[in-house]
Image (tube, rainbow, N blue to C red; front, top):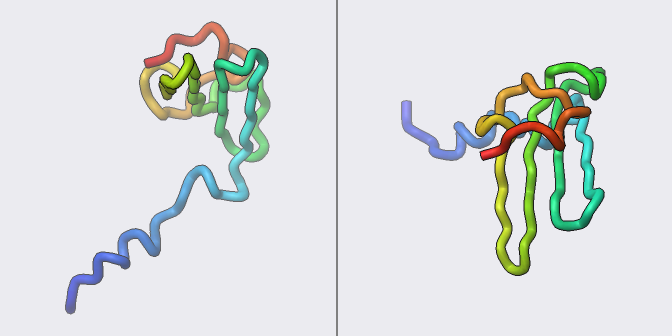
Length: 85
């Protein structure tokens, strides 16, 4: 059996492109963008969200995750008060 480097990427599931994933975006002030990902049927008050914060300051762009990780246990409704790193 030979090794094919394309086999791994061919079978990989892209979480962010999955049609069963609900995505929320909040761009309220233009310099901070929140993006949330959860199961398609998730409610925004449930602790099942993966939340990313992008901050734009001049030419600097900072991307951070709620609680410093990509785990699905955050509440989308609380995105503004969560800690990011």
